[in-house]
Length: 226
Image (tube, rainbow, N blue to C red):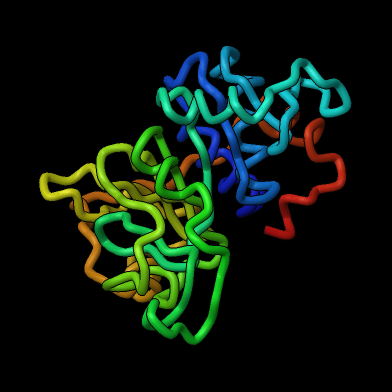
């Protein structure tokens, strides 16, 4: 079992209980594998996508259906999509920035722009995959709000931990730390004060069945490049 395996399972767990919903992992191999692992184990009704217009099945070489863009947007609008996105910055309320670094009127760096973040975060469940948990990403205040936090933010998975907003005031809380990671390491890597429960569990690792599925889905072990 590797750290990457743990991260894939943590992403898969974000889809638990979703049922028949479009599971879109657009943050790279970790999130894509998480969606497909969930479908092939505990959430068989999930619809998984190649990130473009095809619905994928258990065999990565087989296309199960075609999803035109108008239907994709309808699923977003009606809340029938759960997407894993990335973020250049995220704050304690779950607001995220993928647009620019520095003052938005004259930024130091131009990023992606807001793209689909407003619609995703307002209309449907959204989670985030952050491959490098650091104070540069977890900031007190994002430079520009591209996506909003709030009750539709399901989970934040990083290379160190799992977080969410399930607190009375909607502040980010530490849900679990990955094997070999301490609470102190996560606190030091976060640029704002996290809500820390009295007992923070360890993120679960993959079962033997899940490891077998992962080896089938990712024979080239691309997840290790996370």
